[in-house]
Image (cartoon, rainbow, N blue to C red; front, top):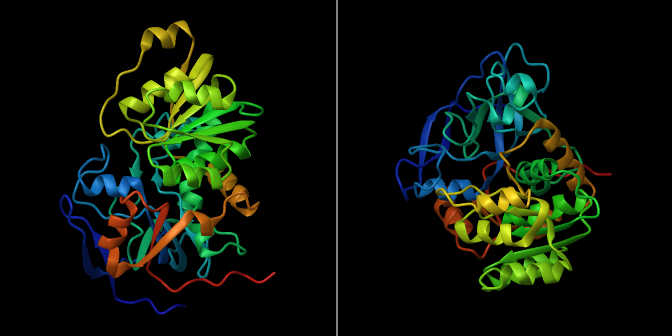
Length: 353
């Protein structure tokens, strides 16, 4: 049995722009929970938006860290799905299991949804955390810690592709080349997209998309961005994945698609945007929201990472110790990083073949 410390340190955001470390008692897992010693926790765009009071679903104060990887150090009396020593990553959605959404296979949009690391009492930017063991996914033994840290972020684009419909042989545009945009590129390619064009306002980000396998990139600040994307695709987009979700990108998305196409909103909008409903109706364009993921999206994300289609060392550009959480958040929102991680526990050595 691992030696479990009586106290833990965790990152806490008490008010806008303030990041602190607090010390408190280590929680004891409930009968259905596991206690996980954290190895890594990613800094997500949702975290940086919430830091500044700009996330519509995360009120302050809160404990951040939903992109977590760790090792099980204790389990509750009723837990059989994981065991001490298992390396795991949580599926942060915490559905009630009883509402209409949960009983029809749509627990990611549970009517009583709670979210680990996003307003919930437990979160991953901590020495350890408790979690319902049913929400923990075992990490493949051959994965590095960095590969494991990309499972949750990749699951979001994987879910978005499943909502878009069959992408095999299709022309796809991705708006935004941040972490989710680059992972969206991998997910769309894995789903069979024939040609993919990525937009971004920053030249460095467009260069990253090209290195990650985009067929072409377009400057999102170009007044003719929609026309340029159509030209680069050689046709109108069959599907557009908007990973930014602001008025200009939504406008551009609707200008890129043609009749019978789909626009998927993947990024989290900070405020409402307007949509051209007359054109949407006349051209039979489908506007699809994409919210988080389901268990099958986690499994598919692990398959994609395991196939080598996502280069974790390319995606993860910085790693900070937990004592430098403020610097990690600043780096994540600087525009110069892809994925920033916070290191909390000792690395887990990759299993030898």
